[in-house]
Length: 107
Image (cartoon, rainbow, N blue to C red; front, side, top):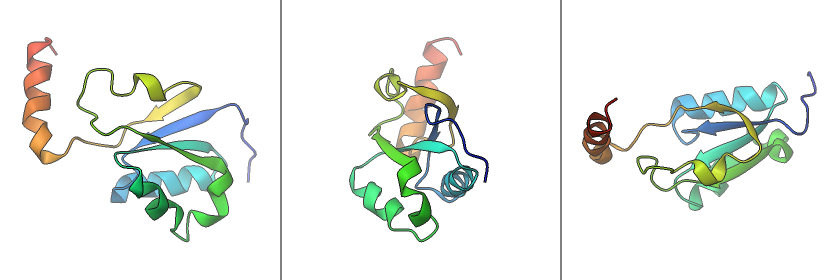
């Protein structure tokens, strides 16, 4: 396994979903240091308890972003992050509000 620089973080959102979790495991297996974004603190133990994560706990940390649809939701959690893999999507109830917001800011 290629040893990655210790000062480089990959932020991965959506790690509690099927695709995001697979991306997390693949990144850890490749030797990357990862900060996983979750919505609730209780999800940390669920992720850490998975057998495929166990060998890599020293490479993994977490940030909590309860609502990814808010302006600036990620501002405080991207310190020291070099790369972001944004796999999360807003919960279905928030999608229409998110699209409405994007339409009003001209995107």
